[in-house]
Each structure stands twice: as structure tokens, then as C-alpha cells.
Amino acid sequence: MAVTADDLGTQDIKKLLIKQAVPSSIGVLFMSVNILIDTIFVGQWIGSLAIAAVTVVLPFTFFISSLGMAIGIGGGSVLSRALGANDKEKAKNTFANQIMMTLLLSCFFVAIGLLFSDEMLALFGAKGAIVQPAEEFFFPIILSVPFLALCMMGNNIIRAEGKAKFAMVAMIVPAFVNIGLDILFIKYMNLGMFGAALATAISYFSCFLFVLWFFLFKSELKLQLKHFKFKIPIVKEISALSFVTFSRQGVISVLSIILNHTLYTYGGEHSVAIYGIISRMLMFALFPILGITQGFLPIAGFNYGAGNYDRVKESVKLSIKYAAILATLIFVVILIFAKPITAVFTDDALVIAQTPEALRWVFAASPIIAIQLIGAAYFQAAGKARKALLLTLSKQGFFLIPLVLILPNFLGIFGVWIAFPIADVLSTILTGYFLKKEMNTKLIQTNDGIL
Image (tube, rainbow, N blue to C red; front, side, top):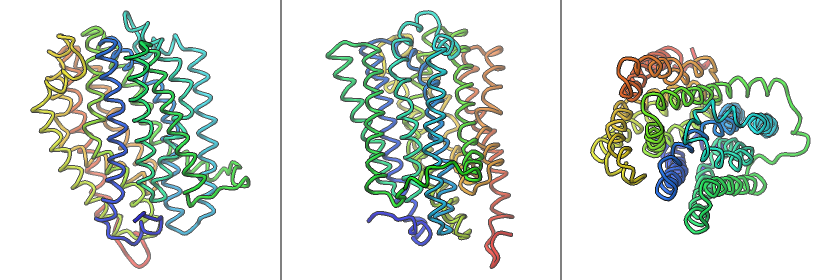
């Protein structure tokens, strides 16, 4: 049975979390498998330099498309709380403003990317032999980014409505399209990097078509022309919370620039390719934790808006528990099967020799990351933008970037890999402190609401 927005405030939290998290996890899994298989095809059919090229290009395009994700998550918090407070008109106005904001901002940054493509590719680490395949991959991808941005925004609104299964399908559709077209364009038509980019671009458009179909025929948010007017208070509220996610993606993009240049300096093109494999595995292996986090957001946001603070607290505890168990299992698998996993991506002997150890170190603190992810997500769902921003940026911004800049000077390439678990531990401690304080002093149910 489908979950409605009202169910978020009434159903058993454990069952509700499963209903929301399982489809979200499956959706993230297919998105991750899509990226993973795309990388495998590129590595096996074009070469390890192609993996390095993709690693350089995607952070820039994802930076632009993350505008949609940021507006979707930030506006989704506003929308969830509006639905929880039974304010359907505010929910509709919020959604319409999200659509307009996503279109305007993504198209603006795409224009910047096209005008300064050489500079952007160089900034994100396209050096030496990486430049030529990066250029081939860049142009078809960037033209499709506004569709991806709208998909990312719309997917979060679908979840905010409680329709996690449709959000899951929205992620599955482009995965099948991309994998099928990869085989056609790269293997059979021999289009190389251009073919890989074209397949990805078409898959983004297919996702957009599905999301458009959902909002036209299945959504509870039936928009009218009157809703498509910028409302400054709503834009400010969306922007404040969206800034959290966009800042995180901005920091991730800065991290990508620093990582790509540092890796090239200490290990050349092969080290960039190694990180390309590791970054794909990070998204793929952690899909259930990301799914739980996405499933948690609308539950926490709705119940916070409705004043059901005991349910918010319960959802936090259960989400951390489930995510921590799954993260531990994932770490064990990575620890044991690091070498076979690496061999799937490439037959480059140097990459195969160096990747397993790096992969194990990057995943070393995985068992504790649930606290950091769920904790940061709670503050965003509750509309507490400052704390959400602080905690969301803590790993990459406050800890990982400085560590990547400092440690390689003393430890070489190993300094890059060891920086990841150190940053995980430090950011988890910080998040745990704020979350525990919130649970013990703020999220206490009274007749009048929060103390």
C-alpha cells in the first residue's frame, strides 16, 4: 500500500522507516550501479585514462546539478513541514518556486561552463593525457545538466510527499537507459568517450520525462499558473536550507579539485584513476545508508512540523541503528574483497596493485558514519539551517580538505587515503555532540511543544 503524506504522522515509525528507506535504498542502489557499470565499461572498453577523465568532469557537472538536489532537499523540508501543518497552499507555492529556482540557476551555471570550458576542465584537474578524453566527455554531459537538476529536485519532492516507490523508479529508469546505451554507443558503435557522455545525457532526459509524468498524473501537488510566482519569504526559507546541501556540494567540488591535483602531483594519472574507482565504490557500497538517510528526512520533517517530537526522536534513533549495522557489514565486505572489486574496473596492473589498500583505508571508519549522516539530516529536516550547515560541511570542509593539503607533504600518496577515516572520526564526534545535546534538551515532548 502506498504511503500518503498523512501516513508520515500516524504509522508506526519502524514500519514507516522501512517503507521509506527500502525504496530509497533501491533507488540509490540503481543510481550507484549505473555510475559503477558506466565506470567499468569506460575502464574496460576505453582504458584507465578514461576513468581519470570521468573523475575530472563529473564533479563539475554534479556541482551544477546539485543545485536541483539542494533546492529539492531544502524545499522538501519546507514542504514536509507545510504538509505536516496541513498547509497545502504553502506546499504548492514551495514546489512551484523550487521549479523556477532550479531552472534559472542550473541554466546560468551551464552557460558559464560552456563559455569557460577549458578553464573549468583545467581547474578540476584535467592535465597531461587526461585532457583529450575529458573534453570529449564534457560537452554532451553539460548540455543535459538542467534535466538532471530538475530530476534531483523533483525526486526529493516525491519523497517529501511520501511516495518513495515512485522516487525509486525515477532512479531506476535512467540506470537501465544509460547501461543499454553504453553498450550500444561504446562497444558496438565505437564512439568512445563521446558515446559514454551521450548515453549519460540521454539517461538524464529519460529521468526528467518520468518525473514530469509523476507530477502531472500522480502527485498530490496539483500546481496551477498562479503558483508560479516568486514569493520572497518562501524563496528565503528554501534558500536558507538549500544552502546547506549546496554548500556541501560546493565543498565536495573544491575537495575534488584539491584531490585531483594532489593525486596527479604525487602519483600521476594512475592515482586519479584509482580515486575514480574509490569514489564510485563509496557511492555504491554506502547505498543503504544513503537510502535510510533519504527515507528519514520526510518522516522527521513531517513530524517536526506536526509537533510529534517523540516520533522525531524515535526516527533518529532507529535510523542511526539500522544505518550503523549496514555500514559495518559493508566495511567487512570491502576489507575482504578489495582486490577482486578493483579487478572488475580495469586490467591496468598498476591500478590493480595500488587500489585495494587505498580502498580499505578510505572505508576504514565506515561503521560510525551513520551518526554523522543522520545527525546532519535531522537538523536539516527540522529547519535548523545553521547547525545543519555546520555539520554537513564538517567532514569535507573542516577536516578532509585541510588533511589532504597537509598529510601528503609528510606521507606522500598514503596521506590522501588516511585523511578519509580521520575526517570521518572527527566529524562523527562533532555531530554526535550536537545531536545528543538536541535529543536531551530540545526534543522533549510537552503539552506546549518543544522545551
